[in-house]
Length: 79
Image (tube, helix red, strand yellow):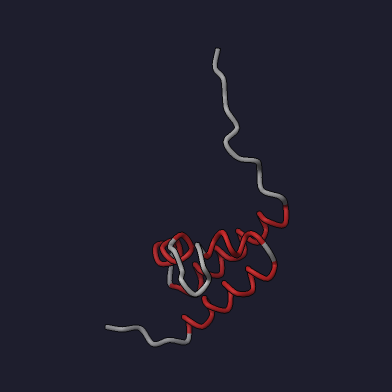
């Protein structure tokens, strides 16, 4: 017999929607999967944590993270 442990509770619909929306925004604005994942999963001192967790937790957090992502789109790339 196999026993499965539930390590986390599933995301609510609002949380899941915000997670998908912020991931898509980061992917589109930041130039692909790798930069988006690095940003969303990395610690961000200005936000006080991981952007993905902050954006997923609340509508206000989503707005904060989305603003940072959009501001990065207007920055010139360094070569």
